[in-house]
Image (cartoon, rainbow over the protein chains, first blue to last red):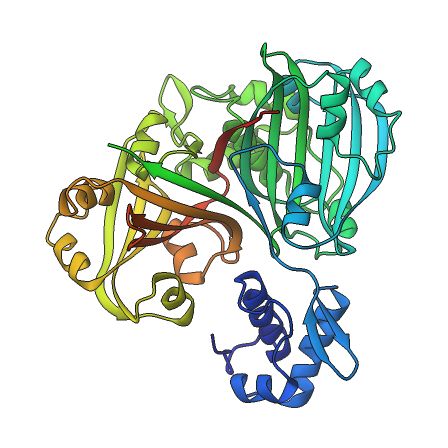
Length: 239
Length: 239
């Protein structure tokens, strides 16, 4: 991919996006090329290369290791669809360290949208920020029937995965889920939490979990930054 | 969902998005409420309601039927993941009429990204615009080994689905595919084709099909307008 030297987007922004894309596409996985190599590859000045890299360091995607070079810290996350995995499991599978910050745990009156999905008028709502290698990657909102939510709220939700807790609380029943994936505009508040520009588009995954008898267990409404998150699936066509 | 009467986004644009969301969420499926009902529900003037509806009529999402009311024409499309379906099959399953326009059929030299995915340096490239009820819904680019592409190019690609042709050409072998779903910014050229604003974000599905021996058959790079397209999947967690 070469840059566009005549359009109005500053070269350092173009180069930043080009590097980000190489990371997302899995072409840069550990150490990225040197300043000299990037200057030669993209026909740009050293100061342009430095600006791009500094931006990516500030975004937490790259890290400079003195005397060693510049390294990819936030690797792209592929969420393999097909079985229910916790975000922690997904991030660990990508070789990164997951972390969670509980932002809200409260009983709320539901809006029409959430009411219709859950069949509830009030629910226990948890809002959590998920990190990969200390970079905010997504926001997950969970809604539970009040009784179940109250039980879950007693655990340390900065470390525990809801799946494990659900299995403990509900006695290891088999769960089923239906998930919808969309591309949506993020709210101002959530953009600030994810450290991405206002009006960014993000991947939105809505997921309803029911128990084996079809009874509502959990509604999750999650937003993941689209520059570093994708869903992956294997499909087959049999005759 | 109520409108924000104090911010700088014109009310008719907010109402348009609110109506669109109700369609996408499956709340308006056939006839939408009357002008009077929308005025009362959203506390807006008749002219605001009319502006919103006219915009949605221009976008092809609503249709006015004199003496009968205003109806939803473009229903939201849920692409159920899990088995390989053609876009025509998906659109028909949503109760709409699919249509296709072949925009390009050519042998091209591949860029680095496509080269790496396909393992080819040149490929037969087809670009098609997909319609649901005459509204442009997505852009699909297919890449094939030249020999196979040449054979496919002999069919009427404005009506035939590539899947059916592949099965015919390759003698009904079983296919396997891997698909990646992202949210990406669309190109200016493709935004114009889809009749959506520049810089819109869209759902991007990359899909590589291999035959049962793992040999490359097809790479598809598709873009679907995010206001009316989503992916859906059933998941389960067994102990």
